[in-house]
Image (cartoon, rainbow, N blue to C red; front, side):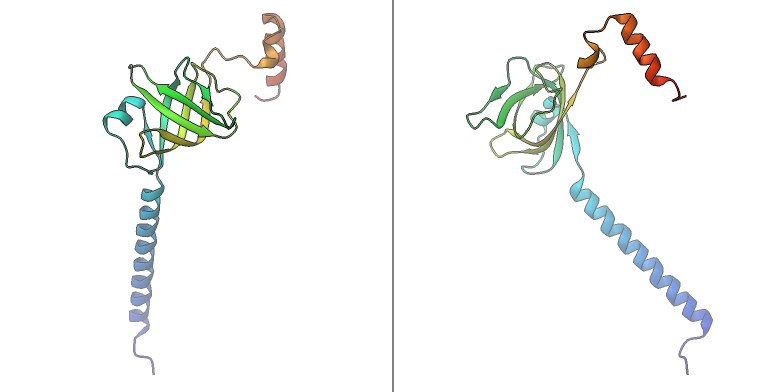
Length: 156
């Protein structure tokens, strides 16, 4: 003989499902909290630095004259700055993005080291609004406009 009436069985099942959904939501929120990347500007990182080793993003401009390739040929050290005079040292090992140059925008993903240097795991280089692809630099304005028109036909 069944201990619960069908009405009570449904109530227990709904309650268990609700508890499982809440538990899954709390678990997901906790996982996202520990994996969230916060975005810092150099002055913010100097004023209120994140905990050492915490995954964050540092954004700004690559300071002119600051890019140095280390002796291993793979590691690059440079300074990231913003509109203030604050500079944040960054170290990155890997292949640099094509658009990475002094004076360009950059977003570095990584963490702050114990020595105060931001250790980047990934670099995202940004270009300004005046960017022209290498292929179009040699074209005159009329030919470039015609090529742009031809590539957009049919996309509308």
